[in-house]
Image (cartoon, rainbow, N blue to C red; front, side, top):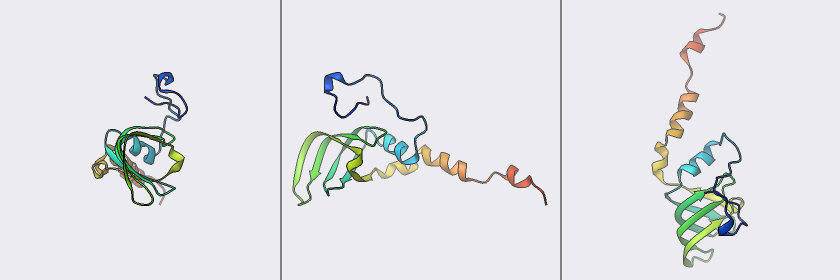
Length: 122
């Protein structure tokens, strides 16, 4: 379920709000990371590691069972956090997403087509 940041939990919409039909590779990969453990580094130096419950098209993320490492190295445990996408400097996703079907689609688009190469003047 996607929701805006400022809505109280009881007023969240039931249908997801999608900004565009064709997402880029980074956003698609972030959405595939839902349900896995990820690490986020924020612009202020804080590091959040937790279970990605939801990622929005604006890269806002909701994590649960979070370990927060502050700039000073102090560790904190948080049950649930919501992080604004514009504050994220770095996403670290699981290695298993390297085998995502998304990358196979990209490779198929990049391969030159032999039929096209045969056509032409010369």
